[in-house]
Length: 360
Ligand SMILES: [Zn+2]
Image (tube, rainbow, N blue to C red):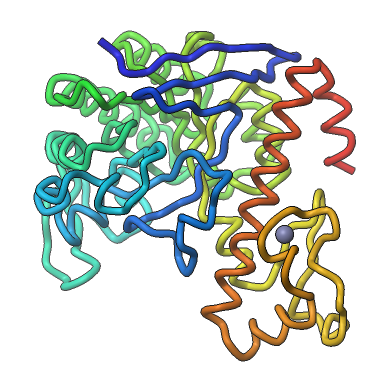
């Protein structure tokens, strides 16, 4: 019995506008999930993201600190974070790629980033941890390799991910939590097809396409996603992990992807690069030193309603923590506005014109 209900309201080309209902909470797709790795966004209280309906938190980090048992004893991750909207937890599989690790048959040997000790993350442990955290959507523990890894390694990634996905299905035991499978296979069509079919065969609540946004070109990414979605069921949500730049999102909304996550808009903000519609300004630029205008006249965010470019430039140079908060809010709201407009255009069968406005 799934806790998830997904309905596609309209399609335009391959692009889809849908409504995802999980645990009686509604999510409009396509959607973007800001990343609250350790239960919080860097420098920004999530209470300030009133438009945001889903956050992503990280199993690897919460397992280490404060520990899933503690969070469970405190009433689960929603109560711990004081966030009653949706939470997706990623499984720790990505950290298996991004951190120094060693793969063994039963899982991935990690070095604890906090104290240097070693521990083994297994597919069982990842799912048990996510069951305890009580997120609305859990991800299987997957095995990620470099995008340009050779065929032997890509094949190992899809075989291992399939094996671990079977274990995840057996161990998963939280009826208020959906479980998503993850397709691997790099840029190799044969492997993406095999991996997608193996995931669909196991019947998950939704499907992620993983192992992307790892340095491949936009064209290669678009093409392999277009290829892979042919093997995924139309009626289930599709999620591309780790992608968040404007053009990248639009590319893959065009290919029928419903969900995205990325640290990118927030990280960009902390570097002073601010999204304004389909372009950027760098607030560090000297020309903004006495500019009284908001970052973007048309932006409804708290920052644009209250502060000038001159003040924000001054803060970023002299009072970074405060600047990060204001700038992060702006970039996340801009990302959400773009997705809202994309959704609206799909509903109105006007997605091509939306794309033309954004991609110049
Ligand atoms: Zn703004």
